[in-house]
Length: 338
Ligand code: SF4
Ligand code: SF4
Image 1: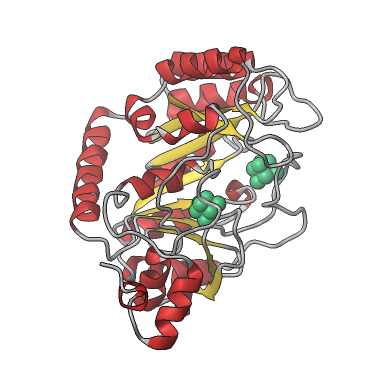
Image 2: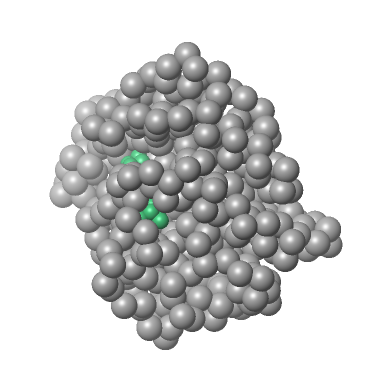
């Protein structure tokens, strides 16, 4: 990434961050899915199919306009595999036209020099690729061996920030792979992060001593800002739940391919309201709602957004909020608490 562009991006980030700290009344980050289709079939994934069509550009633009009208700071395009959308460049361009930061999450398979240059021109600012292992196996083909050539192209041509995420835990066969991936990322000039994942049955289990050691080594290699924002991972690594306030449905939005707002990719269906009908009343309700799934949650980006407001505005359970809406009273009044 060119130095001048990097400095401009940092200044924009600082201004978005100050705005997010000064006001709680706008989304900070939205994940938008323009296509559920994916070229891969990772064994742990429930966010893809092999048949769906790309969402029309006009429809995606209308969703972006709505996000901009809600005051959203950052839009990250995700999937499925968003690089399979034939109008991805126009989507990125429209995010920038509406004054938001443009990010992309991809499995990396479609990067060629020409494609990277088109994304430069469209104004992409962030790219994240997750690499699960060094050699492909029956669970994942997001593998360093397959993707190394694509990473070299990105290192040479990308004029946007590239982050490589590796994973540890969850029964990943070779924990050393996370370190190999992180070292290669740093060698190529990218930032690197590591995600701690759950066991295959979704339960929280502490990392083994070897996994913990690798986790610490990868964290040291990685993005220092990121490491500072990911304290929750230390609890998850110990197999302990983490106490935080998830602001999904408000400060963080997940918009599926059908244009519905969900808490996140793992909690589809809540609140399940079409984005075009989403109002600040919905935003306020979700901002205040305590999420039952928060303590074991490993979704890094939602945790990071949550940090902005973790120190303010305690949350209530959905039952308390429903009762409050029915009676028109605050929870404090109902239980006579201060
Ligand atoms: S590449 Fe991503 S979207 Fe596709 S199957 Fe794997 S994890 Fe799911
Ligand atoms: S706590 Fe995690 S899983 Fe639950 S809604 Fe928030 S981001 Fe999603």
